[in-house]
Length: 289
Image 1 (tube, rainbow, N blue to C red):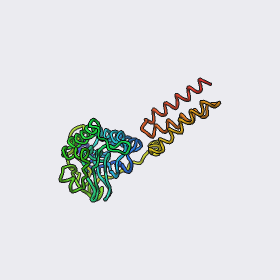
Image 2 (cartoon, one colour):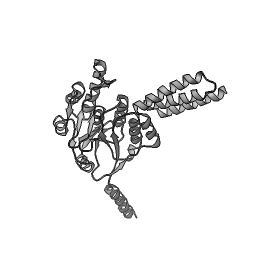
Image 3 (cartoon, helix red, strand yellow):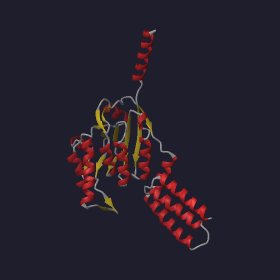
Image 4 (cartoon, helix red, strand yellow):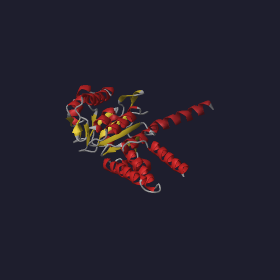
């Protein structure tokens, strides 16, 4: 009986070992906004079910606060994170480069670019040393934490330096160049990476890749995150509140407050806080009535 149990137990372990791992694929494309950050945070909330998270990047950059939220999600990930500038001919400029440097294993497709990460405000480059030094140190520390060239990473911010795959490899800023996701996973398999939780070995060869789809909430936040749309909603909401105060009834004020809150969600206000504000406004109106 003991021998039979041992045979069954060994068979279970062999079956488990033979099963390919699974990788969660998170796509960061286009403008990096609060909606992008919400999508990434949602993905990392379920990351523990996978052997690794693959973050592909094809972006010219975006909002600094959204980028920092994504970087924090990567740093706190319970599993290793692979960053990949993809597809061929893509880019991970500005905010996208920070995300790549935060990844535990970084790679680029042929014909892609990273760099030009000097912060910009109002369409103009930021030259304030306080701000500039913060972002330079952030880029350098992210690179250094993952065993990359800190000095070259800092130049991406202070000198707006750009790198193609070959120059990035030579500078010690990435670990691989790959044409496809499958090729990347083959190259990354077996590599030891340093995570917030210590050293981890990537077990991703032949892994099934599961694309993360945004939830309805994230889709709505992404739509509201358009800078022009969120600004219009806030402006229109304020005008409606002002108009409502000079008119009988509460229709204008209620609609105006709703539009302002939606606009603030687009600019980064947490969706749960927004919901709480709506409940409070509704309760106040009911009490007033």
